[in-house]
Length: 362
Image (cartoon, rainbow, N blue to C red; front, side, top):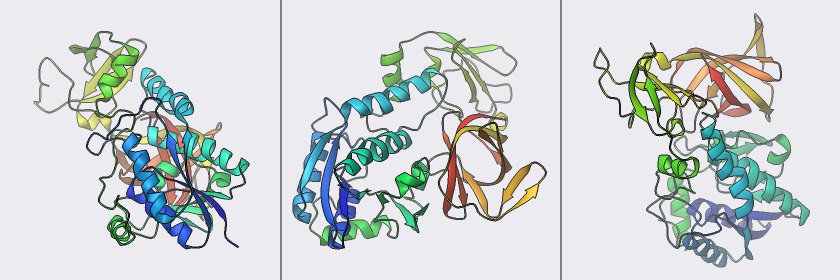
């Protein structure tokens, strides 16, 4: 007997093909487009965003081609509170959030999944490029499109009601299939960047909501080397747009090393000063298996254990220690640009075993 599946349809090619595959497999599928903006634009700006009237129409046309019922759910108020306001608050506190990760956690697999289960659906399907192997989250076969990182915050229970039909396909295969199925979104550009900042100007978006307040840019010795209009406009590891008055003594570029929101101070320095080998994290979520591990002092080294520190970022061999409700992750080699507020997702090979929120690094 087939499942009752709610297919989240963004208006893009991935979610359209995901819905088509689930329907073709014999499940009872209903498509739903999430209206995430109370005042959506009519058209996309290039490949930015995924919340326009154009996208909702593309999703409806795809549902018609597939032959499934289609609805639009208004999630604008919840999205504004749990994603947009959280994004602004995190920057105001000197942290660097990942809104796509928060959207998956709070909207697609909390608000939407909760409503779907209440309505009698068995699962929610999305177009994410990730795999579920025996209920365990794993990387997509398409390494360049893998989205397991932004799904790493989901709980075992949420993953138990999720379906990711595209995890065994490359993006090129998905587009070719969309064309064969007569889906008009086959060649539609992927959305990227932050969907609710259509023009890509994150600094301007934050300045509009947090205002401007002049503050100093200092080097590691505390000497003032420039000024800015708000510490919220910077992130750890940033190189461009610093507006420093004079070059470093060695002539090399300088990077943002730390952000202090209370004093509104941004500290800059050489790239080498960004290197960290120890990361403190909070709010761990264990959603995968516990791989074989061997004891090393007070920490555990898992066989084939790595950590990913940003979406599509490099992975680092590591070991970790659980303490005081959080984690300390020690890297086998230094990482750079590690920012508080981002997620650290732990993998055993291609399998996600858990995630946590980065608090600090040294």
